Length: 513
Image (tube, rainbow, N blue to C red):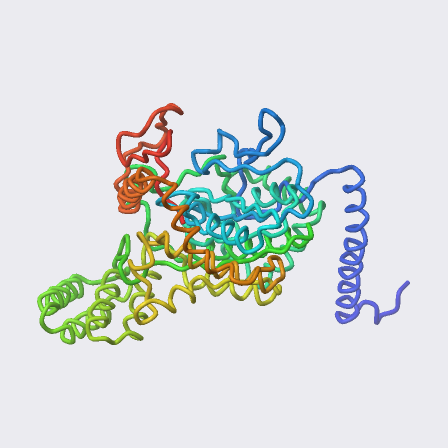
């Protein structure tokens, strides 16, 4: 019989704590044994299921062997979103192979790969060190967000790359997906969960959990991109949704960290590009009032906006004052921030104009440009992981009036002009020289412009005409003027009746960053 002290409340609490601790230690001891067993049985490979945010119904290879077996080329089935690219199946001795991953900015839209920064980089590398073989492979997919780039990265890491260049961030809000299952997860859990996601035990447990919960617990995306704006009424689907916004940003952070890790594990370094966008000459795509405005507040807000419009041509200071008063009533309506930026620019108050333009971008209900938290996250991840960065944003801002990029650098909201692509390529080249990947011969830059002009002339007038037509298509897409009905599709050899893309067959793919 136990003593009377064993039956005291404090003793029972100690025994309960000891029991729980023993249970936790037993579970921790079983985890490595289970992991070893799953490795031996080859169950639960993390590479197949390590994204807690989204899954894919099917993942097809981007590159396939050519008929003669001598090279890898982008599969015809993937050329709705990608442009033709190829590289030798057997890497030549001394060859430097660079894969560039991203969205349509990487692809060179509204033009194509031939005037993307990837082509200018390859031309410069060959000119600077002609005795070596350089191959820069463009893996820019129209509308491709960071989560769609992860399978492509895994694929190209098997093709002996010397460097991965990643330019991503503009396309994160294009596809509809849910983040309810991680909405209330504390931020401090992100790191530990990312480590756990690399284990087979975690992958198997989560796979069983997702099967039990059904598809509602994690969005399963189709093989090809289905952007919200690809369909009629797409713009109307965008609304203020702070929870979804936070989920998208967290998913972006997760994917950037994951791609750096995957590259490091393969022994390949990654170069991050911090994206830039058009602030000064791109109004928000959609604005919405904040919730809870009264009728009186709405009337007062509209009156102030009218007064600002009337004063704009002759008295920008008064117009700016009216707009600030309107923002005091409703600071969520993105277009008013943009209009304030215009008035402040007219007053030559560039610091405040820049701040207003940035707020207009951040409050855009349809975010087609990288958000500030995402840009900060990219630079922070690079710093924490020791990953090299080319800051295209700082580069372009440095040559823009008041550090506010506009149409002098961009064709539209995110796609750089050809001269801007050359600028980005030059910055990447300098970084590669700093890393010792290329060893430029003396005086090579004296020939650079001659080579560039010869390359542009070789493209022909039709190339630029098609690019301008594609630009008009892209602008209509971003404005929500698509007419495709959900569930509708065209034959692979047909061309959509609206928003035409003369250089592409199949469903219109005007979008992307």
